[in-house]
Image 1 (cartoon, helix red, strand yellow):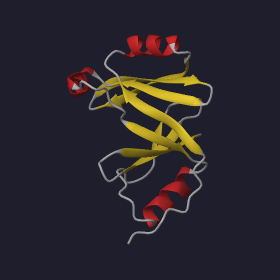
Image 2 (tube, one colour; image 1 turned 60 degrees about the vertical axis):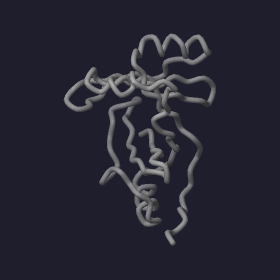
Image 3 (tube, helix red, strand yellow; image 1 turned 30 degrees about the vertical axis):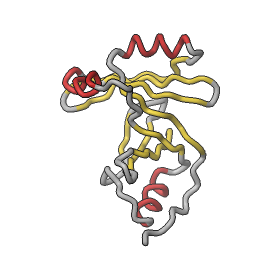
Image 4 (cartoon, rainbow, N blue to C red; image 1 turned 120 degrees about the horizontal axis):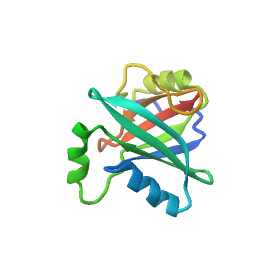
Length: 140
């Protein structure tokens, strides 16, 4: 039996949603009372994607549009798709070591840095029993 995880998780940091048209999705969530609190580009399979963090109160939804090459799978879905749930942690390295020690299936070989937010963030993902991705994230 694998060890239980002994780690402080502050709460759900955000829920990641892949979208096919970032502008249309941003307008939709704006109509629901969310505001764009962070926008950045990222590289995926040699192309450039866009990420927007939309916030309302203490809720954050990460909208991201993959480069054109990655959009076919998203466009083929009929029920929408939540890509991942991210947990907020105080120290990504402590979290990574605790998750690794507890025997969870970690996707990344080490925490990954993204130039999101003012000073960037670091994250890593584990997979759940049905393949769901659970992200641990520290905003730096």
